[in-house]
Amino acid sequence: MEKTQKNYSFKGFSKGAVFFDLETTGLDVSKERIVQLAVVKINIDGSKEEKNVIVNPTIPIPKEASDVHGITDEMVKYSPEFKQVAKSFYEYIEGKSDTEKIQAIHKLNKILKITQEKALSQRSLV
Image (cartoon, rainbow, N blue to C red; front, side, top):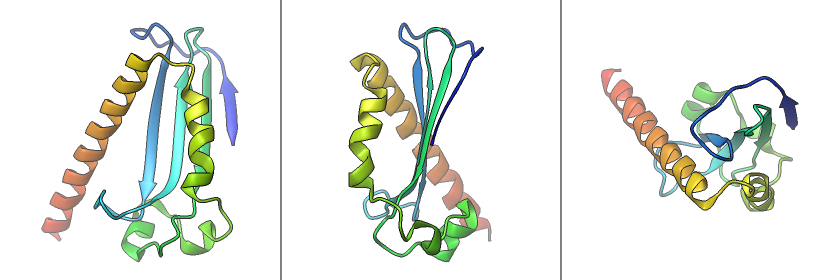
């Protein structure tokens, strides 16, 4: 699903910015899989574009993960696998400079690490 809207202001990047949001089957990045991938692109002219897709992780989604993001095995049953949508997401952000892509990826990695640390700390409180 793609949407385009106007009137967003984003300064600091010469070609706009790209933001990612992922939902996964769990917290261990070495074995978990993506179940939802969303990208928001803010263009230099202030327009905003969004792309969002539910992905079949090809492994069962644990109840604990579904409780967090609301995505179930039934919802992903007929969805494409990540390898089927990865290229289109790459092409979607391809217009950004390599530096800006790297900055977006570093920000994504920081967000994932912080999210993982928060989830682990909340789990230890239970």
